[in-house]
Image 1 (cartoon, helix red, strand yellow):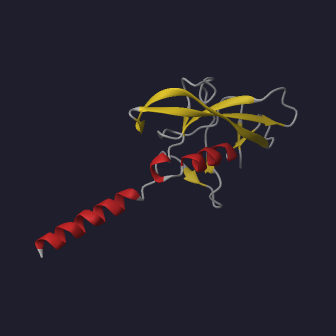
Image 2 (cartoon, rainbow, N blue to C red):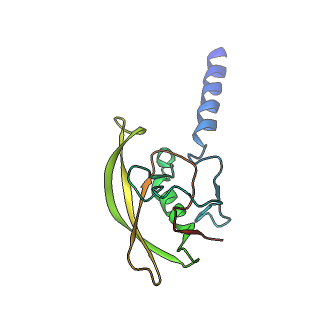
Image 3 (cartoon, rainbow, N blue to C red):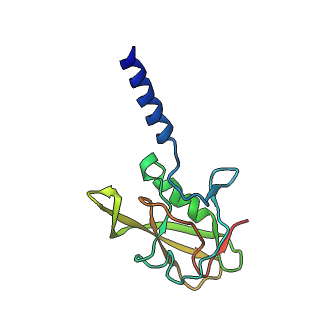
Length: 143
């Protein structure tokens, strides 16, 4: 009886922990679940725009890393509220991450543009680690 009770307690603990989202505490999902609700634009001009300071959307542990990347990008607008379009350029830039393979992970580079923009902008996203989500300097937040 003690063994069965111990197994039950361990299983309850494992399942209750596995449902935790790996995004920061300040981040909520929009009602449709397709974007995050961002509340702040970064004053750091390198945030998300440099591989040395990527956006950390998390989600890889619960198989939502790529979805979280899209949720993040769907939260952004151009500087004057324009709708953006984006595509994944590819992976780049190894970073240290306890959540990656053997302590390392690759960033994803997305190319972002909007109507009347002069060029595309690279946004670097880390789906292995979680951080406070903000819009990069020069972007807006979708309402």
